[in-house]
Image (cartoon, rainbow, N blue to C red; front, side, top):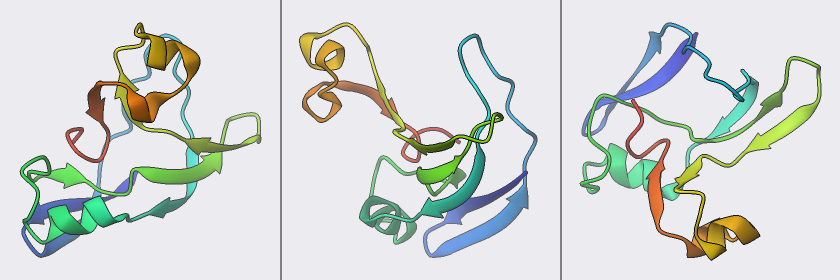
Length: 104
């Protein structure tokens, strides 16, 4: 699959990457559109300590599941057991990680 990879401040490359292995409860999404947000730009410019190359950019995405249903992905990775997580208020929780910040 193709991925836009931040390789150095001010530099990105379009690379071929192997498909990731799916874990229990995960499903592959055929990405139709991936956005580049302000935090991606900050990383690209070398202003973010969280975004270190090599890093796949474009963590805001829209695509289709295998059954054809359209989906929007939230790639905030929470611990999943605090009150904020359980209620679905992810912006108010302490995050474990965020794809696009630490997932290569």
